[in-house]
Length: 123
Image 1 (cartoon, helix red, strand yellow):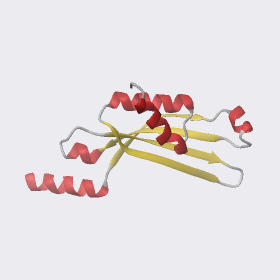
Image 2 (cartoon, one colour):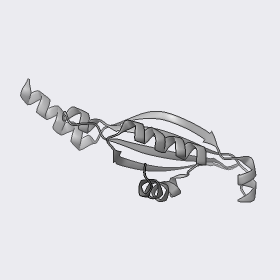
Image 3 (cartoon, helix red, strand yellow):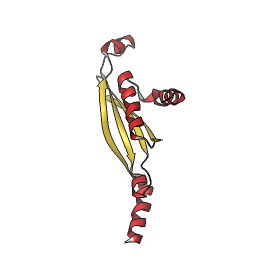
Image 4 (cartoon, helix red, strand yellow):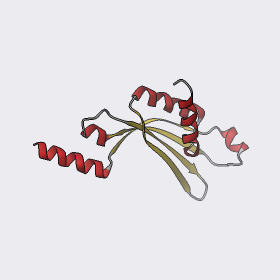
């Protein structure tokens, strides 16, 4: 049984399995889109990620986030994603970050800057 457990842990680490949980989503305000010259809707989705390779290894789980931006242009759909795999061991802190992202409509391109600013503050 112990050998099987080690093989599962090794295979899981190689595949880097991540469990994604939908946190919330929003559409960018129409007024902001008009100011930016965009005449189509843009949806933002926020996910909390649990890195399963850490769970299988018996370690404390490490949490990350994903931000997905979907632009619904007349001719096609464009999807942009930003993943931060290891952000914190504290699930409550991750949820606070995701709430800030959702409230402020943070896009994938701004994820790292906003995280940097948040962690400079007392969080």
